[in-house]
Amino acid sequence: MKKHIPNIITAFRLVLVPIFIILVLNGNYMTAAFVFLVASLSDLLDGYLARKWKVVSNFGKLFDPLADKAIQIAAILLLCIIGKLHFAFIIILVIKESMMIYGSYLLYKKKIVVYAVWYGKIASFLLNASIFWIYVLDLGNFYTNLFIGIAMASEMIALSLYTVRYFKLKKQAVKADTETE
Image 1 (tube, helix red, strand yellow):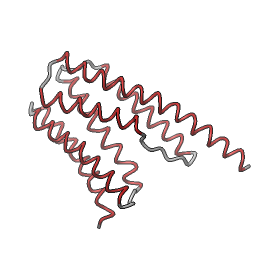
Image 2 (cartoon, rainbow, N blue to C red):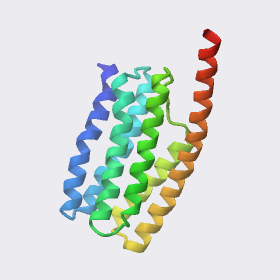
Image 3 (cartoon, rainbow, N blue to C red):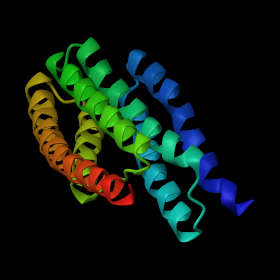
């Protein structure tokens, strides 16, 4: 049973996404912020348990980051829809995440499994903290754009560092391929 708990938590986080969306669309920002916080904290919990119990699964590798990004993208998109955030931010986030997914896919084809590193975790934390406080405090447009702007800057720095890492890993894979031939 223990080996399934991290996957159950991840699935639970995916279920929270539509609940969060409904709450925001109904103007229940404080409750939505609480749901967002539960999703963010349960992400930490399922990762911790999976590592502690050594039960990392293919389901978790795929759906854990999907659950993270689904609620983040929903939160940013909803801030745009309700008029508190400039639409450029959702475009930036979707492009960044698409690049990350594509890069991970290309490395996966070379049998390289990509995992999050500290700078990605810091960027994600800043984005999650910004989203949470924006919804809790029902911040106006200026502060919403400022906080998300800072978080997006950290996301772009992380993307740059991941890009450097991508090319290093790709180079190592090419080198390994030529050495085995």
